[in-house]
View: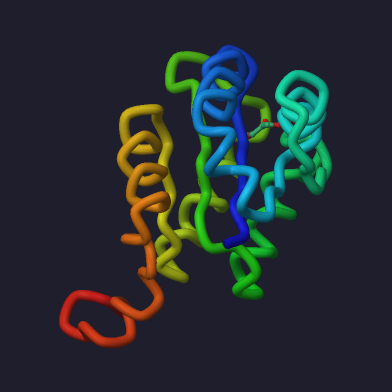
Length: 138
Ligand SMILES: O=C(CO)COP(=O)(O)O
């Protein structure tokens, strides 16, 4: 799966700890990240990550573009809900595209925990589910 990892500054250490804890799972997948988040994962966890621009410089929009082209399967985005972001419109747009394209997105560690455990158990074949259960998927 192609997984995007993103964290706002005050949540970066939480995401690094999370990725470290689940490194055996993450190393089985292709990882993408916004610039600073990605660099820290490379440096501090040692995983391969395809880095996009830093979030405030367009990285969230690049992730959004990958969602729109069906190139991402899961987004883990540790958002900081208590700090204003200069690029808040980009964050909103990214989350909107997750809903437009029905891409699983975890915006906090609790949700990410459930999703990643589901991933390791093979529960996350959500595209097949989406296509077979029409009633509540667009
Ligand atoms: O700002 C971000 C997400 O909105 C994250 O960007 P960085 O990973 O470059 O800090």
